[in-house]
Image 1 (tube, rainbow, N blue to C red):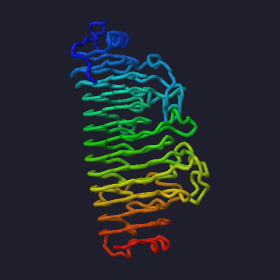
Image 2: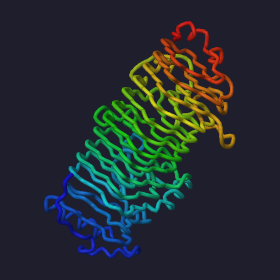
Image 3: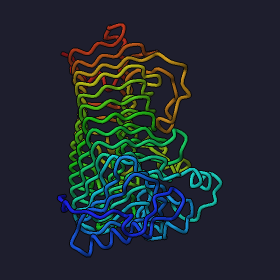
Image 4: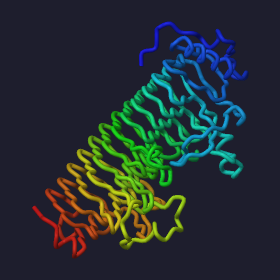
Length: 453
């Protein structure tokens, strides 16, 4: 993305920047003029700019100068309804505050702030008074070449940044802040995208900090493209339900994801995968390394019985084997290395594959998990039918091909390890507290297949 150096101030098109007047039409006029000229820079000088939905054009960069605040209009009529994808399914939704559809080489940059002023949207949602999904703060659908850099995003009505079916997305040096009790205010959710880089961001939100998605079942192959080639590095991710999450909408598949050199702080889960029967898709070639986790309730959570929106479905909850088919999700090739977790208060790890299609090729190397510290937690959902126990150890169910190398677990209650219906296991240099191999608590069947070194 290389917008031309010359630029136009939104004030040249009539924006007042007084924090009260509706400046959206003037800003849109500036964006349209830049697009008609073949691309360029539109900047917001210091001030407050109230706006509804804005659409970027090919080759246009919207820059918020330091001291500039783009304020989301509180009038739902300023966010027109349009077909989009929300929670994995195509539906009529309120348009985002800032977005683009089918555009090339677009950018939002600068040291200013985008404030969605989502409080009224959150109230309407809680009251059940909305007929359509809320606006996202920024959404780029079917775009190629997207740069988001330098600004602060806060108080989003729903998901904050949603790249959708786009390629070449570069997100760096952002601050994303939503209240901890704000509903569905994920930080960054790349969905069915290719070549996404998320670097040096601070994210503190009311739902998942970063969630990698690929559409839900029933959307069709063209819509449910895979999400692939995603890099997350140098980020601080705090609060939220999960720091880095895959799913639960993953019907198109998620592959080739690298997460490195990050801090996860105070999230319900650290790294999380969530899916279920009927959703299909393959999660593969996932690498997580160089992570410091502080006070995450569960540092590692992989749940193939995730029932959000379908808790009463007996097929999803069934822990026995079902017939595998097109809707059976696959998880394989997940590796975790050079990770230290302290203050975990629910479990060291909770890994739950399907009996008919176990998780394949799962490895932990040079990982240290310390449980304890803080108040007794209210234990969140882990998996259908699994008992809830605070400060549990490393629990894994239905895994084929698991390697544990230099894995240390301290401070757990009960056995350090419970491994059931797991096969092709390999261990080296593991140190459960108090360090006795008898404390591993392996199920008899898994124990017969394990290789101890």
